[in-house]
Each structure stands twice: as structure tokens, then as C-alpha cells.
Amino acid sequence: MVDSCLGVNHDANSFMCVNCWRDRGAPTIDNERTRRAVELIGDVYECHGAGGGLHVILDDFNIDNGFMTLCAGYIDSDEYKRDVSPGRLTAERACLVLLRGMTVDERASALAMYHYPDYFKIESESAPGFAV
Image (tube, rainbow, N blue to C red; front, side, top):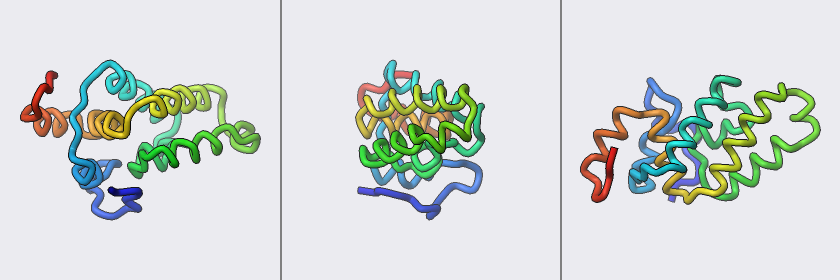
């Protein structure tokens, strides 16, 4: 299982490591939670182009529970809250709350849907039970 891509094998035209997604079995879960996560990930990027306080999750594909806890502590720290806008903090918290309530496969699917929407559709159409 991949814990961190650490910048290795990243697609030159994207943030997320497609090989990290593949290493996790290239999950193709398209449900209400994954679609909502795509929207909230977009909200975070509107506030900060590198994923802000969720960078290690959204850009580096560190989607295991330990990283959810790490980011929660980081964005809830007094120093962080003092340094970011209320809108950015709200977007990051909403995204993190949803991601924490998802399975790891749902998180991987949501990141793939966000970063690689066309690629995700092509790869996932062959998956059993997948509907776009």
C-alpha cells in the first residue's frame, strides 16, 4: 500500500500521482459522497492553488486515516487559523470532514475524478457496476 508518493512518478500535467491511484487498485467509486468531495476539493483550490492545509492529501495523495488526523490538527492549530482567511479555513474544514467520513477507496476515486476527470471516466467505464 502506498502511504506517500513524495513527488515520485507524478504526471507532468497534473497534481495527483496517477500511479498512486493505480497502486491502490484504481478505484472507480462514483457516488454522492465522491461527487460532493470533487466540489469541495474545487472549493479548496479556489482558495489556495496548492491545496492549502490539505496539500499533503489533495496534491500528494496521502489519503490514509493518519494523514486525515494530521491535517485536522494542522488546520485547527491557533497559528494556522491566525494566518489564513475565514473562507479558506471553512473550505478546508468542510472538505476534510467529508474526506474523513469516506473510505480510502472513495477518497482515491474523488481525487481521480477531480484531477483526471476524462481519464477517470475512460478507466472506470470498464469497472463492474460503474455508471457515469
